[in-house]
Length: 152
Image (cartoon, rainbow, N blue to C red; front, side, top):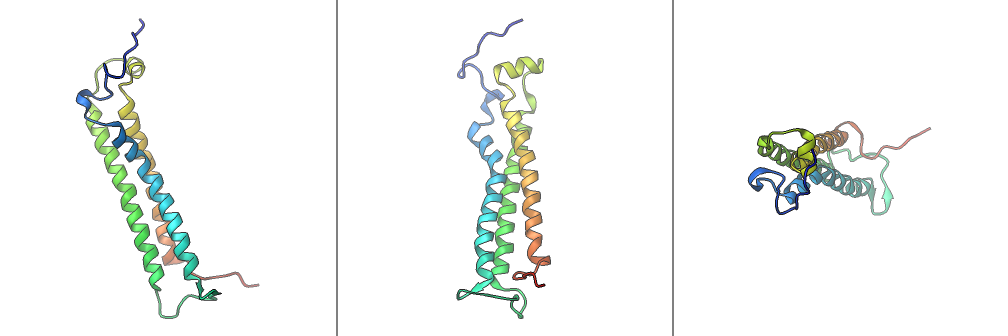
């Protein structure tokens, strides 16, 4: 049995066009984008934390947490929220596409019915992985001194 080619206007990936491609791609990219943002901003803030007026600090401030460390934790929590928001959007897309047409998986893939479901599954996985990476990076200001250096 061969399936006739179906044009993009004849068939949509989800019944009733309940899931749009831009939202699926946004949910897929939210986790990696949040992680990249977290890495770039944290690098800039942390490098400034260990240098004051061009002179490297040998130790963190005695007064406890510096304002820069609070900024690090705040940026990490915001980026974690962005990654989780992408995950929730992917879960919502997964739930919306639960009622795909019945039939063999090869037939549905041939006409593009499972695109939205596949993108939602990938979005959930990337959100989980990158949220975990951001969570591990969020713990570092609590356990690693800010301006340590190796001494022999």
